[in-house]
Length: 516
Ligand code: KIV
Ligand code: ZN
Image (cartoon, rainbow, N blue to C red; front, side, top):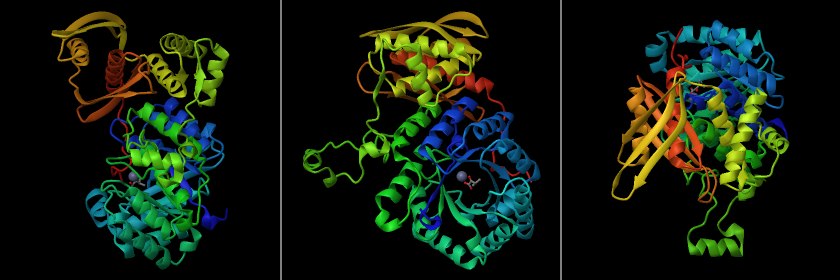
């Protein structure tokens, strides 16, 4: 594949994806996702925003230490301290990139940065040069390019390339662009900037108008050769362009795009499931490529057509994107070694033997309830074990729920608060409501429940239910996830995890809040 027919896939699930309200991930979870991204063969993994917090720095560093096949990148505002911190975090990487950015739209420069345009150019040049002092691979982004003036964009881009940026990213930060117009902007920039041939042009589109993928593809048609995207389209507000949709559009319509990616598409569905399990953001059933219905045919006419000749109604093969790789992996009689080996294949590695033993005990307990254990079950066991090992303020000891026709549901729950056991009871409109009320009667968290959702992890009535609980307090949002074959217990676990997250999380800097 030559440079001109290769589309660079830059995954920002771990950075922009993590900016989705409630989608925070810890270091171990980020590393698990990074390993799956490496298996997917993404070119660049944006591992985080190193200066945001100590936790973010450690996560980027650990990804840089462990990932060998993809370039590992950290975001940095156009500030010396950000760039130096990013450089320190990616230092262990085989291939490292610093991605620095500054806002270029009149509205951002005037109100957010409170800087004159000339000063913005100067700062961009200084940032790119400083980043080049650390690494060769430097990307520069013009934040809010979608609402920036074309002449100004051309000037700052020319200066950034001259200062050493190898990739120029044009973000539609607020999801304002329309495909034809955005494609035209890319074309004009690439023709007007005199040194444009010395950089790869990239796009980073947000989905506020549901056009992130369409805008990205319009830019690719006009010559962009890097797309920034996320698994399941996760990201700030309405999200980013979804990786699976970009990759499959380019692959399915090679007749139009005449280029390809390095992506091993068979890992798309497992990657989507992992990101959904870890973040607690369910995938809508009708989501393209990775939704449960993406390859399911309901109508008789469609089913008949597909049975006669698959291509009558299918433009992609389900197995090519990783559906049906849902193999039966382990059962009741599987031993510890088989369990550990399969976890390693899934990129799950526990830090201690105690954690592995704990996970194995959970696996055995689950295998007693449910004969067929799938990869998704193992992912849920790993997440559950990690939650327990992180020992927050609150823990579930046991619970009993009474649900009977004509009787008000009642839940009795024993839980620990700072290591001390308490038993509480409450009634509610249903067993889940009663359980949450019982927990709240003890902890009085002051949180608002923003979302409650239940998903079956695998098929069958014996499947584990995966519950997501989103809580908000004082503007902070967290997602707790719990899995169990009993969905009321899964709900209690999810609620308790959310309480632990909200009581633990420290203050992180947001990359797009000015600090200049
Ligand atoms: O949306 C955006 O502009 C960003 C930049 C930091 C690239 O996320
Ligand atoms: Zn963004």
